[in-house]
Amino acid sequence: QVQLVESGGGLAQAGGSLTLSCAVSGSTFSINAMGWYRQAPRKEREWVATISSGGTTGYADSVKGRFTISRDNAKHIVYLQMNSLKPEDTAVYYCNVAKYQKWPWGQGTQVTVSS
Image (tube, rainbow, N blue to C red; front, side, top):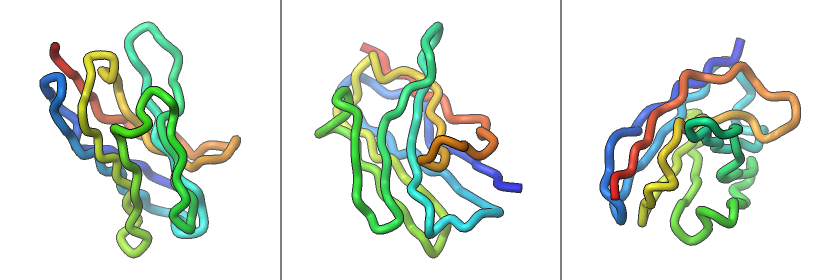
């Protein structure tokens, strides 16, 4: 059974930075593309960024140039470096495998950005 544990969220001021981590256990982590997703209050969960097993990255337009996704295959951890934060980045952030059939979602980590 795959387990996803997100951490690193918190309160930040607009223009600030946070780094999120996602520890993945019980899976063939290194061969899977991984993604970060977020869900703002009263909104659907949306895709934020993806990183392939080889390190190729992709970003939603709303975060391009501000967020950076990375991974440590040896530690089974995915990171999301978030810079130049905006109030509209406020959401619960989740990681998961970047394919249609998702693993069970973790609890997520709350990011709140004040203006």
